[in-house]
Image (cartoon, rainbow, N blue to C red; front, side):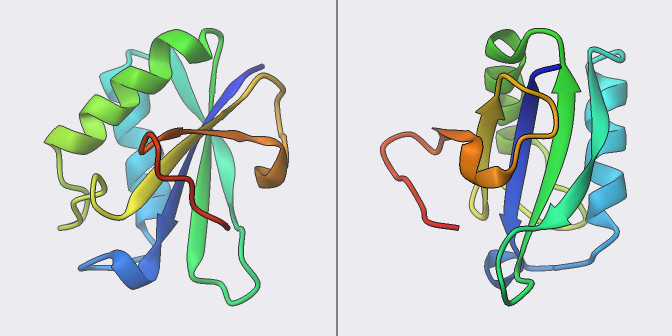
Length: 112
């Protein structure tokens, strides 16, 4: 199943609490009424600063912009993720972060 991936750099977060790996997907799943569900998390850099959360959805093109809007309007554990996260997508389930395509922020590709 396609995935939306939210990558968060703890060095850019006000409150880099690891519990965000549970709170964020739970909030998105409830907000989307189950259309976007938790599919795990992983550290995606060698130093362990960047945490990525995978979210499954049947319609990634429909849901990634909505997820971005949620990140822009809500704070998660005191963090404004619109300032510290990036959103990627993949058409295949469980894709490694290197195989995902960054969709937000636009025009500001970051290296993981």
